[in-house]
Amino acid sequence: MAERRSTYVFPTDSDYNDAKDHIYRLMSSDYGDSNKIYFYGSWGSCSKFGWDNCYRADICSDCSDAGMAADIFREHRGRFYDM
Image (tube, rainbow, N blue to C red; front, side, top):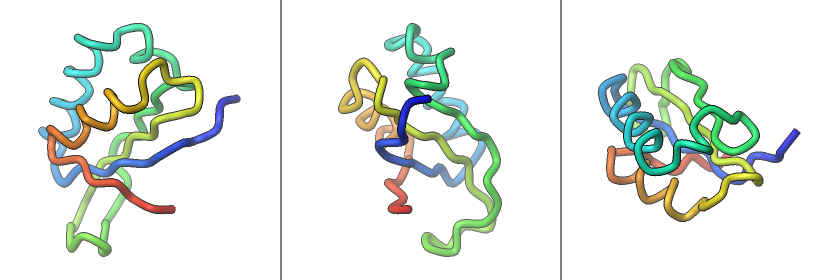
């Protein structure tokens, strides 16, 4: 199993789903492989950002372009979450 490189959280399911769709369009080979990008879905509250609910996605060590994935996540209001 691949290691987690970075975690991003999203404030709404709409932002999360938009990011997933964007990843699917530009990085389709990574989309369905949890060793590349792992989409958790709803992850509970994110008090660090003052959100009642958030949605989580991890970029993993086997991701073909971690920088592009991070840019896509940030474009859709994803915030880096230091674990």
